[in-house]
Image (cartoon, rainbow, N blue to C red):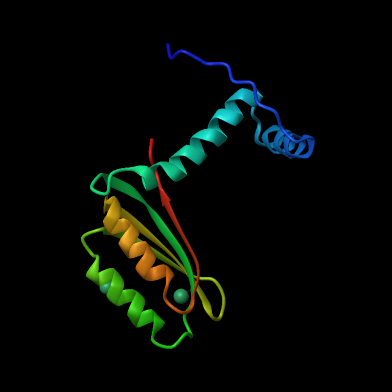
Length: 136
Ligand code: NI
Ligand code: NI
């Protein structure tokens, strides 16, 4: 069995109240499990940024962009073709008349994923870009 360490943590009352409300609705039986999950998510989200540039990482690049922005769709496609060795699948959802959501599943070297992510994020017309890398 994994050894457990006890950590005493203080919370602002409002934050704890919101937290308890949410985990109650979700069906968590103990606060400890919910806090562990929240911390694990935080660590998983940040860990890959500290990893060596050459470690293999897997995740999703989530982006929302304005498809009316001139030349954007072509530029985004060109970028993805250029990094095609990293991309395993792409999901496209037309959100509204103008906005598109794209979820790009990636697996490759950390620095290559970062490069693609930065390349897409900085294009004019890209409104949201979030890179979620799973580190277990
Ligand atoms: Ni293509
Ligand atoms: Ni679309």
